[in-house]
Image (cartoon, rainbow, N blue to C red; front, side, top):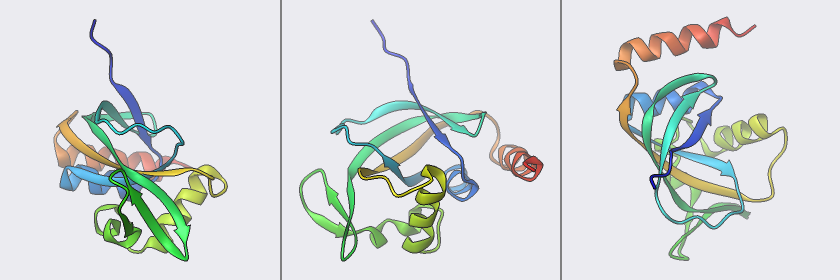
Length: 138
């Protein structure tokens, strides 16, 4: 029996734009489940289906002086190592976005790598549609 794809929704423009343009993105999500495997996902921006891809757990995110990632292999690295592929300019901007989306800083944070397998539409058309959707909000 085949299992369906999980859903991953982005609600901030910068990471979905990065994902569409580059085919991958790192995203921080509140989650305390210890999922290590790569799972198949359907990718959304707000209510718009963007495409299909995979989501893989990189590790837990914690503030240990600086923001760190405790990877699944138990090594610890700076979160800043992933910021270039997050859609954000700085770790501070990234963490602010996590707080904005969740209305607070969640206790359990996980870093995931999301990779596109297939986009729903052509890149430029998709970005144009999402920009209009973003500007149409309020």
